[in-house]
Image (cartoon, rainbow, N blue to C red):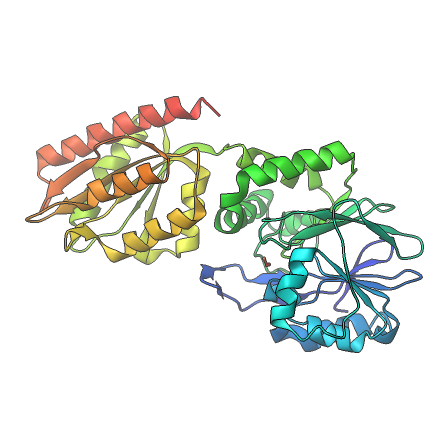
Length: 404
Ligand code: FEO
């Protein structure tokens, strides 16, 4: 049985992608799922499709529950290909179906498919349709995380089908949060939420805050949150709602992460006194070596920590490329409410530390200047300077953390 009933005729008909490890550059160490849903009511309704790679399985799942030719409605919550990739086949096999999506979605769909024969109805926040015994209310969520994005609320069952929002790249045999927590842990699930938010939703914190308020203002009671990736929140929907509210408001752990790379272990040698200084100030510390760690994990650790020390040797008067890649990723993610500083070794000319500091200032992060450097290989005096620098950074991080 490849389908699971979520609640009262709302079925998960998605697929599990056990093998994916590179999701458009985002390293998905836990795999992922492409969740879509079928509502069995007087007028059968499908919400989203699946990644095209899994179209056969996606079709078989729906066929196992309903004659596809009888489907009356297809809701397109999001047109990114991991969810809309199978849409053309779905529409072809469901010729009676009217398609519901935002106006922005139509602009994109007509670039992706020949939609000239599709029966499309654009919808906006508050619009609704009936499937017989259920009312589907649409909620536009533009830039969460694409312009076309929306969510669908099933009023009678208090189920929010939330597309990418509240999702996790997490392949598992369990479909629900309580099942996963039982065989794994809540902290594993929380980590997957941090990971997803950091890598996909970090730039959109202010929009998330606004949308969460809008949901509260609409008075929507939510019993279940069913995202398009990962597990469905039926036991603890309030948990992920609170996590999103907190993350969007800038909350994170009072700790420091050291993110660095090194050419000849000189920058790496500075990490030991840095860790000692942070720990001696009583603060937790994580260490991430970039070439040994998927970039998406480095981004997550950055996002979970109030403070980050970024380390790079100077190469050709600029950053060591793996550190440059990380800084480029951060630029796109537009982090807020974090404090940073920099460290690194150099030979005959420095530059990397100042460049990191300047980039972080451009990103409008809180910055402790001027960072710390070491020529060729840190002397005992330079190691002592790293230790004192780290202690000062930990104290500053603790003070800054109080604002949130
Ligand atoms: Fe999972 Fe924005 O697609």
